[in-house]
Image (cartoon, rainbow, N blue to C red; front, side, top):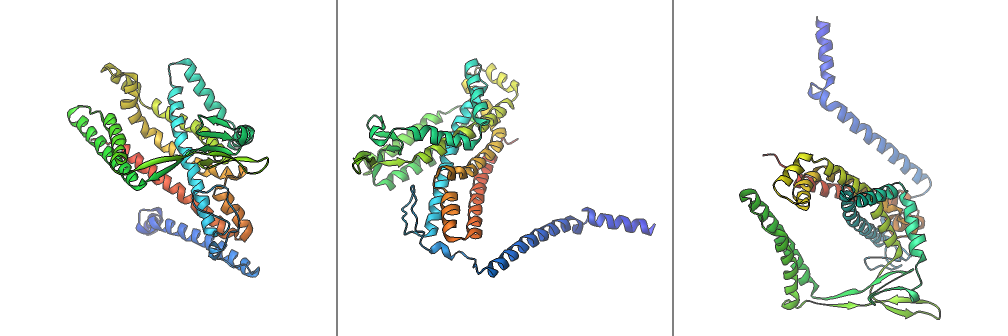
Length: 398
């Protein structure tokens, strides 16, 4: 009897019914992970000491001594490696934001089109998904860069868009905005956004309490147009344009000077990422819409709602619960897939920092670690935002 009780107590002790049994496996797992990382870190340090290689981040303050063809901030060969890292990070964020924006719009349109009653529209959407989803992203990237954009004419014969924008093998040249008192205009945009948020909240509360619908979209449109317009009329804000001008640099070389130059590497990368990721987002949207029961749509139609109103007011608010989680994964994949930029020499963090900077300094461990932490930070930031948005739009049971 004593042996049976002892065995039972020993089993309960480690099975999780006791405090020790609950936390001991977790604590042991943490210690094992720390030990593994500590062992490899110590081993790397010993090997580096034997080879006379020091470890540290002091190199970030040294002169980079290489140029970057595209930068959102001021940069030159005399800048530090830290500055070069910042250029790479900003370029990565830029292409990720552009890709996410266009992939979302295209994915929603294609996803809804797949469920269209129009046979032609549904089939075109289906074939788009099947084609772009089943071709490797790297091959699509090569196609848009080498077969499409690199086949464009030279600047002297550039494609002219109404004498304000020009497309050539060197990239897309568009007018540059020259602002006066831009800070006042910027603050008006922020104030407009805050006012629009209050309008939508008030409209939602009125609809829930009284059933009355307020034209919140028209009111918001008026706010976002009129408030910034007032800054031009009475706020001293003005806007002018600097247009690109074709200039002869040498006897046979022409290029556009002035305006804003969008390099072909950025266009090819954003295009490939958007078209590829949009196929997966489209399937997420289709699954979300199909997840809403048919009875919901029939009930909405029975009270006189149009198909557009049914989609906007009944289907999509419920479908978003299903759409958002898998779409978050696609946003993360797009951000990480942007590292393929090195294949076409777009100066993202992989090419600039984990490529050129690492080859010049030999600081492989430090640079690779920083690059990995950068992508991890970007991914976590996207996840936190999308999880917050998912909780915000979740249907709360009363």
